[in-house]
Each structure stands twice: as structure tokens, then as C-alpha cells.
Length: 245
Image 1 (tube, helix red, strand yellow):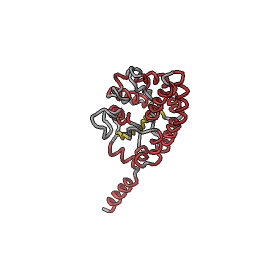
Image 2: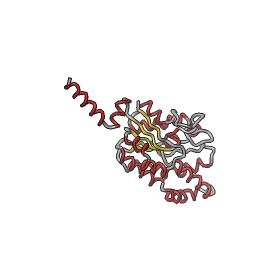
Image 3: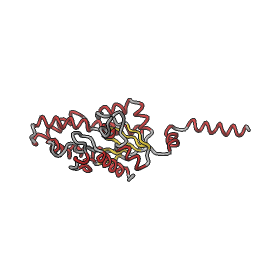
């Protein structure tokens, strides 16, 4: 009887000192995907209400396809500096990322759309002014510096693979801003590629190439957010980047 009690105590001690990560994986039997970012991983405007992340958003589609447990930390309207601050100070964010097996990162869109609108106004529609104004405003915003710091902060918490999504053109073909987007996105997305290649185990998901000029199918009319088909396209390139397709 004493031997049995000792065995039971030993088992309880092992369970008690097991890491939260190990327990989580045992409880759910699945690896975890943590989605960080803005209204795109949140899945804004895919349903009648926006009070919680949409199950049609790409993180859940990746989770369904790859049998992953999904924690969606996407927040509508979030900018790069705000996500960096959350990863540095918000314990919910830090603990969730710490227990991740895969991370997706979609951030900078709100910073960049605001910049594109400013460039459009200040250039007066003259393409000759697009590039100098863009570089000036990108430098002032520090968006790519923030994204680099976000990746570094994630790396202090986990060595999980990170998929970094670049920026698709969110404007329909009949919107003058579409052509401004086409003019400046190559420089913007070159910066995303440079960030991805600067860190080990960080992979680029090329949303710009995947969407191309198919905004009618992939972007909600009168909006800048992906349709259900657009979210599926984002899921496909995320799965491919992670080698889970």
C-alpha cells in the first residue's frame, strides 16, 4: 500500500511541475497556431457582427487544414507600434505566444494605408511625387522598424516558425488609389521580404502576388478587407509558407 501511495505521489509531482505548454498540448492533442495582427486575421466584415474573430478568417482556415489549435489575437485597427507594445507588456499576448508552435504575423496595413492616402493627397495624383513622398512618410512612421522589433520580441518568447504576410493592394481596379498602390507596393513589399530574410525561421507569405489584380474576388466591395475567398487565398499561402499544405 505504501509503495502504491509513493507511486501516486510521484505521478502527481510530475504533473504538478510539468510545463503549461506540455499540459496544453496533452489536453488538446494538437499543436497551436497563434495569429498576431490587425483586422485581416481578425476577419473583419465577414459576418453581420464584428464582436469576435471570424471563423472564416485565414488563421482558422489554416487550423482546420493542418489540424492546429488556433489562438487569434488579431485586433481591428491595430498598428505596428501598438502590437509591439502589447507583446512587450500584455501578459495575455506574451503567454499565448510563449506557448505557440506556429505564429502568423499580419501587421503594418493600417500604418501603410494611412500613408498611401496621405501620399495620394499630397502628390496631387502626380506619379513623380509618389516615391519621394512614400520614403519620407515611411521613415517618419518607423513601421518597418516596429515590425523588426515585433519579430525580435516574438523570438524572446518562442522559437516557433513565423509567417510574415506582406501587403496586398486593397483598392478595386476602378479606384484611383489602386494604381498608386501598384506604384508603391513593390518598394513596400521589398522591405517585408528583407525583414523575413533577416531572421531565422521566418517565412514570407506573398499576399500581394497571391491577390494580384483580383480585388473583385478577394477584397470586399467598398472595403479594404478580404472576402471569404480572399481569406482562403491567405490561408493557402500561409500553409505553403509553413510547409503544411
